[in-house]
Structure formats: structure tokens, C-alpha cells
Picture (tube, rainbow, N blue to C red):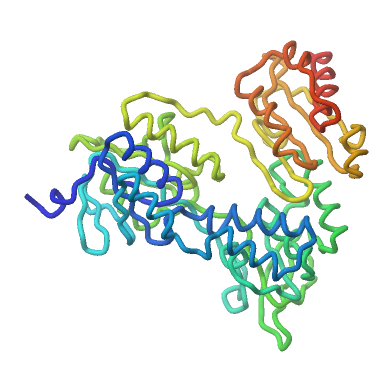
Length: 446
């Protein structure tokens, strides 16, 4: 018996983010499971992304000091200690293997010289920040979101490269705590993939907080100066700062996993292609050895959100257990947890193709709840497919939008008829009431 056969598992999971739930659920279902992780068990979200950023945003809303906000953030992230999570894995029956895993040959993974066999392999290695192609950027002080959400420093002058969800959230965090923030985005508005009004309104919010937004320009060159650094822009201007925060996107972490030995050729930008069951797509006959490869989370390039990764995890678990389940991504929310929150789901009017969209909107300032909150910011828009007469997309910016827009997510996923949606009664006074006139207007247009 080989060493790999001595250490054989029913399921071997590469990556402890989305993979953590997969390994634990399968172990509880009676499968022998091992989890391979080179960083912290739990993945990016609890330590370097979702949890610390939302903690800092909450502290900013409450007007706390930077010191208190950092202390609270570090408590939320357990001071980057994954021992409790690793213990939870052990309690569930999962073997945690520390190190970087790579396919040695079909049915065998190698981790730091040791081999482990598997029947089902799950790749959930997540994603990593992308450094933009800017001359000299490697020679000046930079952060990725990892450093920005774990360090105690509060830069006096901070450049944020990127106007996507991460760039917007961190711009608000640092501006709220007193940094002189300049956000640089090559597109002509923030959140360029979403409905234009959400980016425009969020830009107004950030400007009122003191952030300087340079939209429609790119970064061309970075260099050190006596007082810090200088970033040159494509419009001929420049910005002086102490640090650059890189938030220009992420790419699936697929390099050097050895997946080619299994007939899987990941795209460096798009990740591992999967079918509706989250089974990895192979370009050659594979699985003859009785093994199967699955993928979940950011590494699939489908939807770079923790909730999407958790959804794919459940799909993988069901299929590994022989209970066929197909993933449906029509209604995966896209949220930016600034104040106010940006929330989008389903089709975006910016990228919709092959559909005749019918749109209607409503300003939150017209709701009684806005008067109660003393906040007149925000708007909601809904998009219907004229041919089918059902909702296919939505976008909103407003306080607590991540909560009151959930019913629209369900309506899109379930293809609920507008006749039912227009008959729903909302509690008074809530922002959810803003949905009612929008639905009625859509119904009249269809």
C-alpha cells in the first residue's frame, strides 16, 4: 500500500474559505474529509475582507475613534487567530492539513512532500488581488485590501486605485476617520458595471465626506518623493500621497495547482469553468480513475461574493452526496456596504443583452421613512423583461438596502408574477414601501 493510499480521503478540499463548509458538511454526512489550507482556516472573509471591512464601516457610522475601531475590528477577526475555526473543523471530523496543495497525479494531492489520495477533489482556493500595470508601483508604499483591513496605521494621505465595491468601501472608511482620500478610477463613474444612478449618488456621498474623486482617468506612473510618493495620471495631473491602496480587482487563485494533470485548464482571469452542478469542466477524458473534481467560490469566477461561494458550497455538497442539484445565478445579490448601501441583483441595465427591459424607479426621499431617518438619499429602480412580464433585475442605494431589497431578490429568483407583487403590503413606515409605486408603474408599462 502506498503512502497516498495510507492517507486517502473520500473528499479532499483545497482551500479553507468556501471549502471549510464543504469539508465540514460532508464529514458530518459520514464522508472522510480533509481540508488543505496554507493561510488561515476560514478563508479571506473572516480575516481580510467581509468581516473587518463591515466592522470598520459600522464604527465609522457610529463616529468612533480610529483606535476604538481598530480594536473592535481586531476582536471581530479574532486577532487573525484561526485556532477556534480549526478546532470546529476537527470537531466536525475534518482533518486539517496545513500547507499548499498541488495535484501530483490523478487521485493524489501533494502537500509539502506528503501525498494524500482522494475520490472527490474540491478546489476552493479563492482569489487574490491584482496589481495594475503602472510604472514604478512596486517601488512605492502600497497596500492591498489585506493590509488595509489588518494594519493599525491611518495614512494621512491615501490614494485608492479602483472605484469598485472594495475601493468605495475602503475610501469611505479612511475618509471617515480623517485620511485625505483620493480615489482614482479609469471609468467615468463608480461601480461602472451597475446602474448609473448608484455610482453617481455614491460619488456625491464620498465627496461630501471629503474624498477627492478622479474619474475617467488612469494611473500611469508612481514614484517616491521626499515627502512620500507621487502618482501621475493619464490626464497630465498628479497626486501626492503617503500610500496607495490597490483595489483594482481580484483574480482566481489557480496558478500552480497542477490541475492540467486532470484535464482541467483554468483561465488565469476567469478561473475554473464549472457546469451547473459545480463540477469542473475538463478538456480531455477524465475521471476514468473513479475520481471527480468540483470547484466553488471565487476560483470559479462566477460571482465574487462570500454568499455566492456559500451557495456553490451547498450545491457541491449535494452533488457529492449523490443528490443532484443545479446552481442558478439569476438572483445573486451584489452589495456595497457603504452608508448608504448599494444593492443590485439580477440583470444590470448596463450589461443587459438580448432583453427588452422596462424600467421604473422611485426616490427614497418620498417615503415617510426618509423623514423619520432625516436622510433624503437614495433611489430604487426595478427592471422587467417585457417579453415575459417578470422582474429580471434591480438596483438601489439607500439606508439598510441590503435588508429591504431581499424580497426583490426572491421575486427575481422565483419569477413571481407582477400581479402578486403589486398586491404585497409593506409595513409603515419602511423603505420597503418605495417598492410599491415602482411595481405599479412597471405593471402599467407591460
